[in-house]
Amino acid sequence: MNLLLIHQNFPGQFRYIAQDLSRSQLHRVLAIGRDSAPGLPGVPLVRYRPARESAPQTHGYLKSFEDAVLHGQQVARLLLNLRSKGYRPDVILAHPGWGESLFAKDIYPHVPLIHFCEYYYHAKGADADFDPQFPLGLDDASRLRLRNSQHLLNLEQCDLGITPTHWQHSLHPSIYHDKIRVAHEGIPSDELLPDPQANLTLPDGRTLRAGQPVVTYVARNLEPHRGFHSFMRALPAILAGHPQAQVVVVGGRSVQLQPPPQGCPQLAEQIAVGSGDRCPQGSLSWQSPLLRPPESASDFSGPCVSDIPLRIVVVAA
Image (tube, rainbow, N blue to C red; front, side, top):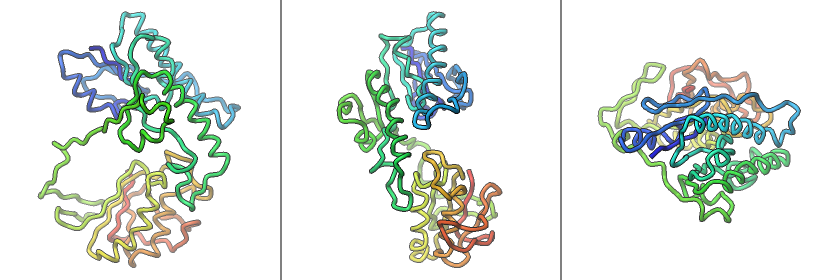
């Protein structure tokens, strides 16, 4: 079988299926990804870069759609080139979130197209307007509605969709529910196992060992979309109830999945510092040059915390 994988940040969610099938003598795996994609050893990767960025004069609600068209247009050019050289996939598996597979059916109309249906946006009840502290205005709600136009095209043209959880499945329009299958991404249980000898040396030199009470929070970025503010709100009660617990937070300082709330340009720092006055005295330590307490805490009012080795360590990824 010729399997074509399309993912802007390949391998992304396709890592394990790409690894497994590429080891087989029965399958040939080819991938398409952005020029910034990390790639995967053993899997040929055709890289691309959109011809340009969305135009400054494009309406703000339509910028993400224009960006998707530009990604899809460049991938279509790659597919045309592959087809001219005799390449024909038996199946195309694509993450459509960046628009890369928008025109795949125009190049290979009879090849089954499977979409990884990661998300469908809602102005309420999902990733937006879920916390009174971060209300969603009409402008952002309208932008999300238009952003779904791309996903409706993706749902209409794919032959089958897969999504990891029943909750993600429920977010998509009911008319497409029968078209989407729930298939969990799985857990590499041969790698993620209890290790009684495990230890972790923190940037300040302390070593945490298996058996110690440790609370962790790990995310690509420390932002409300990923629940960072809720985690920090809960820490005072956690530390009060478990005085010996160590807390390790790992994540970047960017806001990736939604615009930062107004007045919070350094959101991760402000959330963490705003929790400082509610955590036990001397319990927050910043251990990375990328992440430092700001001068003030703005909406997350509270005193800044000294950079001393203590029980909460924030490490910028």
